[in-house]
Length: 251
Image (cartoon, rainbow, N blue to C red):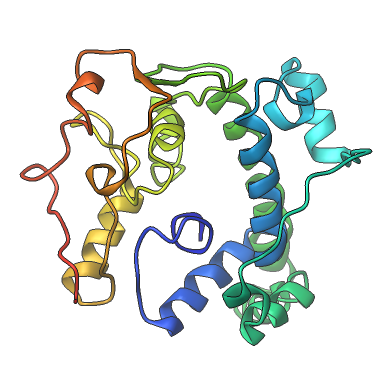
């Protein structure tokens, strides 16, 4: 959902795109358009010289947790974001947006048929709780603690690479890499950075279900990106040709 819907870092059949977005909606945070708006606001704010602590996870763990899980940020002069027409007029995405909470119901019915209320409670309520709290916790650490390979100069927030979270986040915890190369479909760009999301994407590519996959070397150079390690100074990291297959375009 993140690498496709928000960053469009690869192409795939429309039915597969909708299915992956649906899985993202089942996490229980928001509808697809709500997720795009939230991401765009945070992304914009974190690239400024300064922003509200809410948007940069800038307070202590417990305060930030209370804010992110129980509060709503209301800005006096909020930035204006306009969704792309392809998203704004997509009937399937609009349906998902209107019904994102109700989309737990079909899964709940299946779980109830298989195991009754215990399965529903664990498969819906507990899962959504763990997912939402886990998403916040990963975001907190990925913006406060962890290694850095690159610095985005003049940005108030720097992403951090949180290695111990890489498997349970499908590679999304390589957040310093993501801040450096936001349009890249691979987030674990070095040999010692496992990225299960990238492995899935490669499997889809081998099946002919993903193409036009964007890698760090495909992106335009950023003048405000400063390498902090010797391997970062090489450009796009060790996982280029060789160690991970470079998907070729269908075109």
